[in-house]
Image (tube, rainbow, N blue to C red; front, side, top):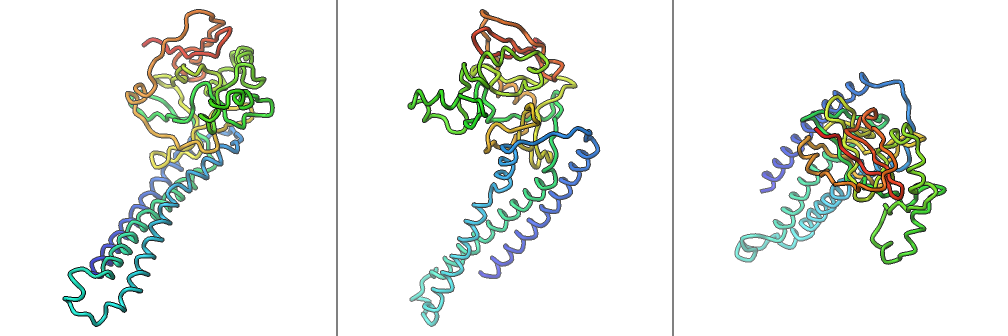
Length: 317
């Protein structure tokens, strides 16, 4: 029995090693493409983006440690029980002994630990190779699209900025404040994220930060990348399908993630992207102006309102 489990552990270790080598080769290939296509532009990556990347690199570590602890506990239990079973007859032991059960638990957990540790190591290899790069991904029909699940329109991080009053405004309604964790609704009178700030932006300045969630009404869809030849979102530490990177947006000082625990991006095909970002009818009255976002790589316009945040209007196909 022990030989069977040991053989299984050896096979699992060999499989994990082969997977790790494959991951390293694919990561190196992506890294070569990124370096070949890199520009001379340098941007500052904000602390929330770096914190999100650090969290992503540690993902799976707790599970690997749990399986390792379970394996150690199983082997320790088997070693403690086994001396008491020595010398007993088959009838006294029964079909399955407690030491067999403990050994099976230890070996099973050990196999899973090997797999999880291999995954953690692969993630370290992949993410570590692209840590210093910010990429703007292309968008084309049928190609991959990165969708940031945490970038909700009309929201800002709780910590805001030096002049942000969004979190303080939310404290006026304690029951509502309990519903929010790292993101809070952008306050209409906030000196940094208020409606007047949105409407005071010149068109070029609006285009540069069009991915910022606080610019848009909470019921509006986020800007949709252009259908052909356009550019999509920015991601930090992109490593291909192995790790899609941390979604970030342009800021006046560089790029930044929405929160310090922004989840890694995911790849979606064009059809799935359209399903996940359905069209919403915007209000027809109170329009202030329209800003063409196509020069910034988006498929439509920003429609600003006198008494509300902007709505995205997608170009008709």
